Length: 299
Image (spheres, rainbow, N blue to C red):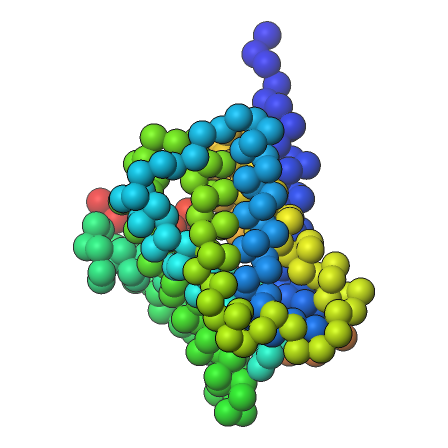
């Protein structure tokens, strides 16, 4: 008899979706005491330390060449340091719900960057529709048609710049970092810890905190660092190994839902039905540009 597919990946999959979806809540909590650059630095330092400890326990070798560290530093800048700061400062202007929904534009940004900057593929008709749907979703999520305050516009631009950094980081990683002969956890540990090193000079200038630590800010940054920036990578790698990359990548459809629920429940953030519709369109956009399904069949 054929073996029944194992579901041992499911707990880690759900943990990852909840943790990444909760990151926007944890950022809000962290900002109660920490500066925006302090949030970005601390999540890198805590997450990097967590991953390095894991590598030590598992006796995993780390990169040891200057050229390798240079490429990892660029990736750390694009995938951790800059977006980590932009998401933190962006959430000083907009709700965690909006941040979570706009984070779902990452696949859209990725396909645009690959097409325009790396020229590794051309947008087909379904992906083109996905791009249009995505921008319509952004308009609805942000409420751009009804008018945004200057502060809110700043937040939206900062968040979209953060997802643009993600969009650049994925093809860069595929070309220069993923080809390195090291286990994924080794690259992740080096990358995350490197982001803290890159942000250290800015923390020295601006400081980590702006007011005394509170319980919420402590637990917010601890969970954000140890789980959202640390163990989340381990869960993700495990999900890919046990369930395959296709199933593992669908966790990105869970995170905006979790972010919305937690923002409304624990932060009493308001939302409009148009934002929910916009979020759905952004997720559909991501599925189209990632070729999950097709609206128009092409030969």
